[in-house]
Length: 128
Image 1 (cartoon, one colour):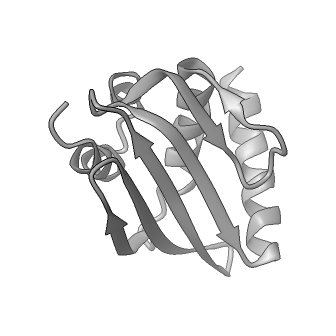
Image 2 (cartoon, rainbow, N blue to C red; image 1 turned 90 degrees about the vertical axis):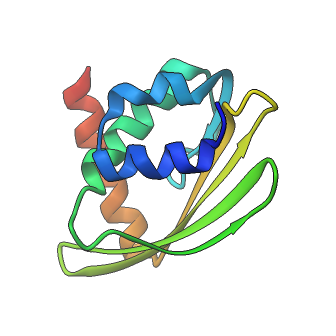
Image 3 (cartoon, helix red, strand yellow; image 1 turned 135 degrees about the vertical axis):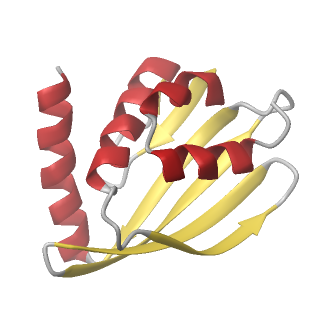
């Protein structure tokens, strides 16, 4: 994969979760803002990210800042859900093959974390 960051942006823009497995390494580790242990593996990470794509698909979602290096990036985002202004970052790290090996999400404020926890739990339960 030539540019995993461009591939991630295209995936977010399209909302097509079917593209996730091709972007993730088998050993990818996902760090959720609401789950206290890292989630390891392509299947579980793809599940979390697919649910997040649906929860965050609001038209107000915007990446507002990007810091990137040869194998990692920090993407700051904003959106408004249910009247709550949400600010967060996606932290991505990828390997030599351009596959994401670590994906970490951080959110603020606490009201936003609680809201996203509720919406993600419902989305993940519906996917089962």
